[in-house]
Image 1 (cartoon, rainbow, N blue to C red):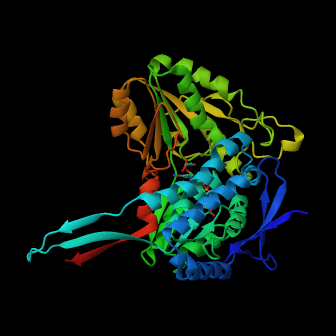
Image 2 (cartoon, rainbow, N blue to C red; image 1 turned 45 degrees about the vertical axis):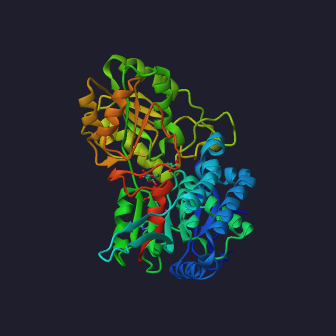
Image 3 (cartoon, helix red, strand yellow; image 1 turned 90 degrees about the horizontal axis):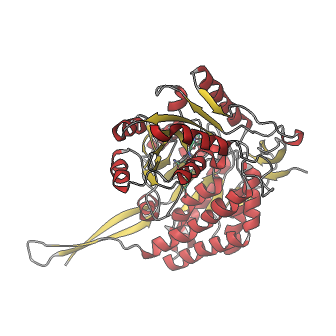
Length: 487
Ligand SMILES: NC(=O)c1ccc[n+]([C@@H]2O[C@H](COP(=O)([O-])OP(=O)(O)OC[C@H]3O[C@@H](n4cnc5c(N)ncnc54)[C@H](O)[C@@H]3O)[C@@H](O)[C@H]2O)c1
Ligand SMILES: O=C/C=C/C=C(\O)C(=O)O
């Protein structure tokens, strides 16, 4: 029998009776793997009330030491149930086992530990001031949780991106209402079991399933009992959420889309650059916000680089994620597959030369209903082509030669987005100059997706508002108060 996934409110899974159900299909073979009960407005309200009670009760009174110890216990319990989380995330996304076991699940567990340690160790500021009577005054800052945080999550790296928000939100003492993507309901649900097991009080962690507009997502962001909203997803959705947050003047933290540039200079370590750009374009089947869809290669190595990347793209192994030999998974959904294939057609209409890919791979009959697309490389498009300007969020990139540093800085910056760049050169003085000039939140030099969780993470321009990571997360998840004492 197909299992039914339900929301988690006030420490308990809500019975599915009477709920509207929607299908969660496997991206690998298209079969219905679960039915999900959509949360209605009354359930959203119940979750918000439960969260507010938690803030007014034991959780709100809990000391930092105990709260942070609980966060470590959450991480340890995720690690104990590692295989369950890997299986759940693989089922949701269809991405290969090694990506789950090496990146997404361990980093997800680490998010709970890192932010607990940050909260315990970061001091607040203090200023001694002079006063006319000569006795002076002392100012010091207090950090208080913001309250109930709405956490609206995407489907591309569901567990990693959700815990990236939950880690700091909970370590700072907030309660949360999580809305996982309708495409990836499993790991958020499993985390409810973990929270209960380690003794996180009821109401602190709530999960509501459903869609965005006219559904759980919109109900959460419009609810006046939600004090702030953290969101990762499309820029267009961010705009809608910001409008909802304007009511009640509530704070937002946004990680949005990207159209990131990869820049390869002729003096790079060639093999490392090919590997790095390959990962940045094709990891997670290109469904990474930080991924590279525009690649600029210095002219003397352009053809050689294009051919090396083509050879790697043609060597991916498609198949079920459980099979450890497979390196490459499907897209998340039929809808997303259609969107990406639409861009594959558009590229040809816009005059691209298809270096490799451009369609659906031949798959065995049992996987033919999966959401597969080929890794795709193009050359020859104009800089104003839609394929070069719009975020596709698929396993594809356009390669273009360049001749000078100034030219490539201008090309990299010629976009509405500003999330990340990956830069390949052995000349570190140049790398430093470029990093100052390219308008993005994150620049990688001779690497990509190398993440120290203490560093600021976020985008400029249409790629987001605010920074999360390390102490930067505390700025969003707490309200800083100043206390001024006249001595
Ligand atoms: N900058 C980053 O850190 C980062 C990271 C990962 C993904 N992304 C971006 O996310 C996008 C892919 O994810 P997606 O397709 O799940 O994004 P999406 O915006 O379609 O959906 C994200 C979440 O928002 C919800 N939602 C949709 N409309 C809503 C509304 N009106 N009100 C409230 N909630 C609503 C969805 O149900 C889902 O849970 C890409 O654009 C990608 O670049 C950005
Ligand atoms: O798709 C976006 C992935 C973002 C990754 C992180 O935020 C991280 O590594 O913590």
